[in-house]
Amino acid sequence: MSPIKLSVMIFAAAAGACAPALANEQRDAALFAKVDAIFADYALDQHVPGLVYGIVADGKLAYVRGMGVQDLDSKRPVTPDTLFRIASMTKAFTALTVLKLRDDGKLQLDAPAENYIPELKAWKYPTQDSPRIRVRDLLNHTAGLVTDDPWGDRQTPLPEAEFTKLLRGGVPFSNAPGITMEYSNLGYAMLGRIIGNVSGKPYADTISATLMRPLGMTSTGFVADAAPRERRAQGYHWADNAWTLEPTMAHGAFGAMGGVQTSAVDYSKWVAYLLSAWPPRDGADAGPVQRATVRELAQGSNFPHANARQGHTGADSCRQASAYGMGMIAATDCELGTALSHGGGYPGYGSHVLLLPEQGVGIFAFTNRSYSGSSVPVWDAAMVLSKGGFLKRRSTAASADLAAAYRSAGDIYQQGDVSAAAGQLAMNFLMDADAASWRRELASLKAKVGNCDTSAPIGASGALAGEFVWRCEHGRVAGSVLLTPTSPPRIQALSLQQKKP
Image 1 (cartoon, rainbow, N blue to C red):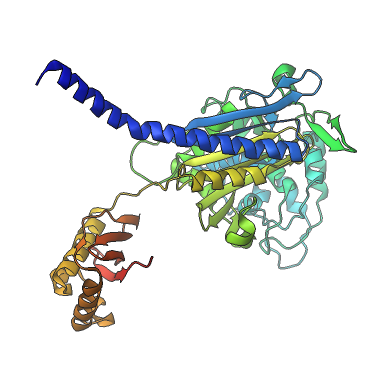
Image 2: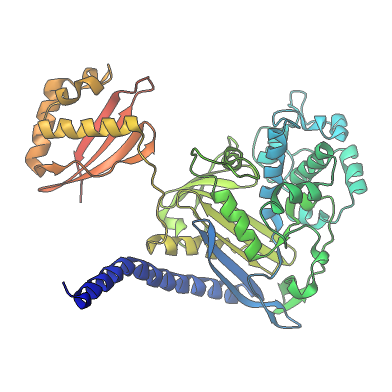
């Protein structure tokens, strides 16, 4: 073969290898352009002076876009480094710090909160049989405290001494603890006090040292005025067809519920870190908090709600089951799967974050207009990315036991008899349908679809269960395998059905 022909073949092979990557880049660019339009329309309709949004995928900031201005006087444009206050999206930082203190043996989630805030011991509960507030109740918003938006936001600058006076005097209850979920900024301010009392340092210092500094979030903190004005998005209120500058609230006792200021670049590191906790796996755990603890943020209270998906696509097509976890709302979405989200509404600011752990993707947005939470464009953007092929479920490798059972399922189909896997069947298997019934069902299925390629990979939903689709001569077969909780595992259930169009 001549050198010229060889070089042409090498070039063609390289071009062929690059083609899928190029196609993905072109697809992503088109999708990001659609998402840009969603946020541009939102900013216009909602009278938002400036915003920034980011998409985190595969552990990095895959796309970020600033729009509008961070300051109406200077007209300085919003950039990925512009600092915004993210309001209640602070709560996840507070919750994870509490969990880290639990990991370190410094507190217990099911212990009474009064063990760590002595002022609570004198509180008058609504009924004689009311349980004491636990730390867990504060994390889940089930402490019986009344929903306190927007009062709680304005308490951000409250001095610690005044907060102590408030706690010492007691507060009225809306319900007995443990009865229902009621969103409480006061409850998360109390968690900030617990962090301070347990760690021996101000809560802001402990949260920063535990999470922000280890993650390299060097521009993130609780004292907004500590950052240069030229980097900060000034917060505005829209009324009477005009913007009014909101005064910057100082750091204080309530900051643990909503006081964090950060940039898109910094916050993307936080999003990437949270997403890295999924899926559970072996291997090094670099921290700063162990992966299993991060996943506890998704553990909701036992008061789930049925809601429509936020945004323009959920009212008719998708109902979610959701519950407040720990600094995150955990939902099961009919199209997106597991979804963790939280909004932030604040005088002068609004924000929203959506994490999709099964796809390893997060979307967030910050704005500088009061209570412009941006949940609608964030969720709409997620649906654009989903329908456009950007979101892909992370595959779970089949365990050795599941792979062996799956091979047995293929043998059963090919031979038309469950005896092909007699040693793999659990004791209940032939009680539920005897061997003769299986032979008839297998023969009927094979008559419809013919021979099948049973080498297609199985999609594992766990170590002991999975689903698969076989391509056959005259159609497809959809199947599932479920193993027993025994050692060794055995096949307790097998389903094989012709896949409908």
